[in-house]
Amino acid sequence: MRSIARIIAIVAGLAGGTVFSQAPEFAQQYRQRIGGAIDELRVIVEDFNRQAADHHLDRQQALNTYAHSSDDFLRDRGVSMQSTITRYETLLAQQLKLGTADPVAKPLVLMREPDDVVFANTWRDFVPSVPVSFAGLVWGAIGFVGGWVVAVLLGVGAQRVVRGRRAYRQAS
Image (cartoon, rainbow, N blue to C red; front, side):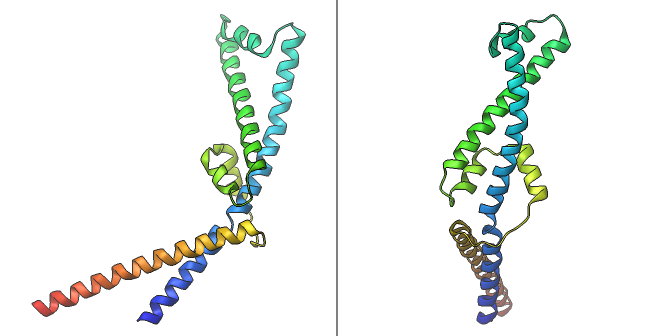
């Protein structure tokens, strides 16, 4: 019975290691998607800034013009533009954090405040890689230990249940 438990623990550790070793690659693919999103949002934000400047307004003055309009469409368009600008600035900040983080820490940086759309699309199109980087090996080791611990704890719990049933049968 012990050898089966060890095998299960090792298999669980390997499964955890395999899954966790993909964290740096996921962070890399996420970072690439952020770059694409930023490039597209930059076009929109710079165009808005340029149009505002053409009318002798800065960005905030242009947004205020939208906000104080009597037209519902223009007010809503101002809210939408403010949302676009905020997302652009948020993604820029996250890109900077991801770019300056140590490779092992990038998955943690990503998980602090992921962009829902970029995260979902990265997950949808994620392509696993072989963990040949140091970060991939570290995350693989973390996953191995985590999987092993979960398997051991489940094994200990199962042993207690079996022992409890045996003790109950012997007492009856």
